[in-house]
Length: 365
Image (cartoon, rainbow, N blue to C red; front, top):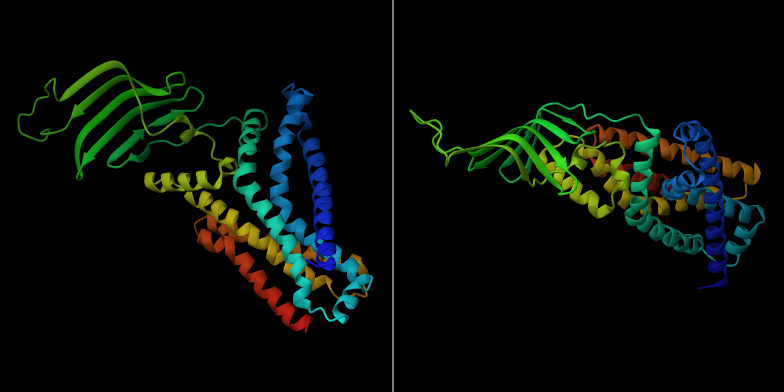
């Protein structure tokens, strides 16, 4: 690695860290000012609030990293261009392609760091952040769905009329088991409640029917075909977490957990799976976003501008805003089911890659 490579990589990484720290500090201060009333209303002490921001700050870092890399690259490159360093480098026989190498090496370091953080590290800290927000900051959550049907195992279908998240109790429960599209067993109960100690469901006033010849003429239930009872503990492949607040629940899931959640939701036929699919695709596309934005950042700021460094930085912020707007629009369409999650995650990257290549061809020949 040449001295020039080390010089550019060092400047990009240091500037990136500095810009991220500044933005995170600003966001944290604004967020604290907005939530101060709620903290006071809940009588939260300083240690509890600091614990919340210990989890909040990594989440913000993961969100802003791709855009902050772009801003850092524009700042570093425009400064080099203003001091005619870029002209000197190119005049010494270094091609523009070769000049891009240290930028991409810096991008690789940040992209790997970002992928690991967003994929596995930050989701774990997000769990306590989300729990804090649900407990102290958000409005009380009520599970308002009625007549909930879902497949929880192969050929096993779960139903409750309604569910209370405060008591973890479901009402008018039934569980139907099929064999080759034929109902063979049906378990019903007036209510079903979660026992957190046993980690099992307790059925109240339950009835179990073995359905063999229920449609036969003169059929009468026998002790072997029907059982009843007042209370019974049972294990189901469903827990109270399946009825919790789904708002940004994906923030607390690693990539592996997102994959499992998507499989489970598809199997059960649950609505809203697109939100989790989009998030998973974005986790994979985010590192590539860093490379795209760095490429564009070098191109827009490598020429000495009459407007000076300030103009190029302003242009960088404008392009960042356009990218964010485009990204948010594609994500919204995908979550609404109007666009494939895969396309939603990659269309902004592919579009800006095409724009960057066009700029590279016509602006830096």
